[in-house]
Length: 150
Image 1 (tube, rainbow, N blue to C red):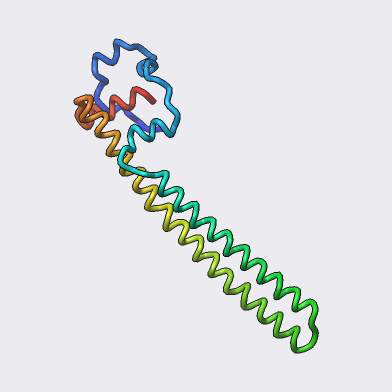
Image 2 (image 1 turned 180 degrees about the vertical axis):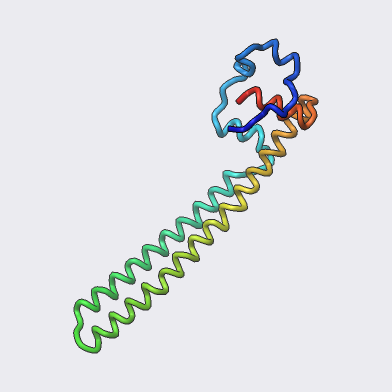
């Protein structure tokens, strides 16, 4: 648990609200609260683009699974040198599929990481603007103010 003893005391006016300071605030859904803080971030469009790319990745995974199943069936139907070729082809395809899967995973992380970075950056900027500028609180007092609503 964090130690907040080093923070300054809360403003006197906040004590007038008692233990339930902040209970007068309306209830917001997570999406509505995010829209108040993340005004400049179009996260719905980013999520739609990421979802579309991941859907394409799933399609490619299905094609790969089908291809592996087809090679496996061919290996079961054949014998001798043709069977050895089919088994070798299957092993080679399984080997390369590992790298394809890793590349798709890295691509997914490569799409999600910048979005999450944007969300955090925008959120902290929005919180700063809402508390520091709109309420006229200084940076340290701003932390104390937010601490009261935990």
